[in-house]
Each structure stands twice: as structure tokens, then as C-alpha cells.
Length: 83
Image 1 (spheres, rainbow, N blue to C red):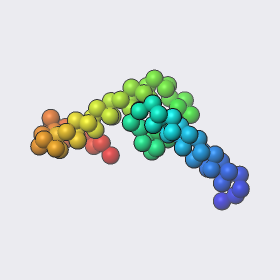
Image 2: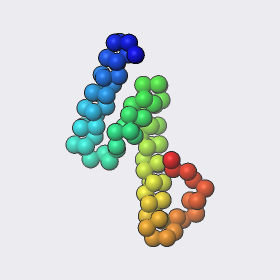
Image 3: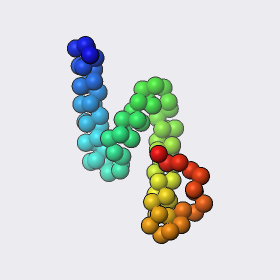
Image 4: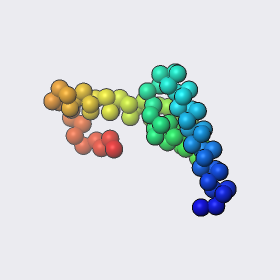
């Protein structure tokens, strides 16, 4: 790995860490991996509003899946892969 690539990776990590700190202050509930994915999508030209709505939708599906696994019912969501 050349120095330029290492520098870019370090800067990207620092940026995600800073965004994660802001995310924590705002109680977004996003983990670093999800936050990095959202940033990456926006950097690739995906509309940030679409990323936000998609993220919320995924959050709702994960919540339903989690509650279903605790309560013994997944509300018919067997076919949805959340990974």
C-alpha cells in the first residue's frame, strides 16, 4: 500500500469517526458501519433524502424482526433478509 492510499484511508477513518461522534450527539442510532455506508452512497451521487428514507425503512424492518424474535412472531417477514 502506498503512502497516498494510507493517507486517504486514515482521513476517511477520521471523517467517519467525527461523523459518528456527531451522530451520537444527535442520537441517530446509527453505528459506524451504517454511517460509513450512508456517506459512501451520498459520495457516489445517491440523493441524501433517499439514503435517509432507506435507512429509516431498514431500521423499521430490523426493529420488527428484533421484536418478532423476542415475541415469537415476525409478522410474516421470514422472506426478508436483513443482513
